[in-house]
Amino acid sequence: MKIEWKPEYNMGIAVIDEQHKMFVATLNSLYEAILEGKGREHLAKIFTDLESYITLHFSTEEKYFHEFNYEGMEEHIKEHRKFQSKIAEFKNSFEHGESEISSILIDFLENWLIHHLATIDVKYIPCFKSHGL
Image 1 (cartoon, rainbow, N blue to C red):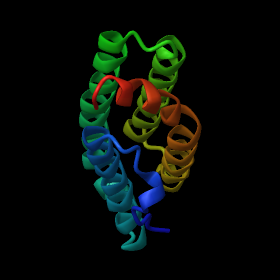
Image 2: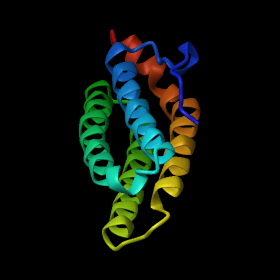
Image 3: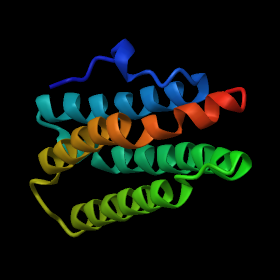
Image 4: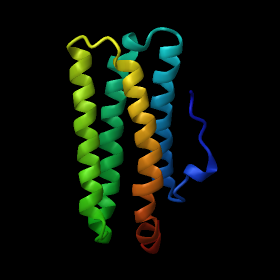
């Protein structure tokens, strides 16, 4: 089901919240393509969008981790690398003709979004805010 951005998803850090909204928009784009029966047709663009998001968002967070000497940096970066690896696996499956990739991918992305925001990203909020973000 399409994800509507809710106030409780906000981290209270404008640059991060805007990037998270970009992720939700990409997820919703995939969802809409699946509903139209065009999930596979749109996957190449979805993967391009996800790779752009990963580059932008992870580099933003990691820049601040280093700048602010965030104590949870290593754990968080490991989560980023796991996500990148999983997306690469999905893309590889897609490129090798996996037919049911769209619905599996959307489930993964939804679960990652909810888990990552609720349990991982919230940990850096005090650090980022104490440094003026």
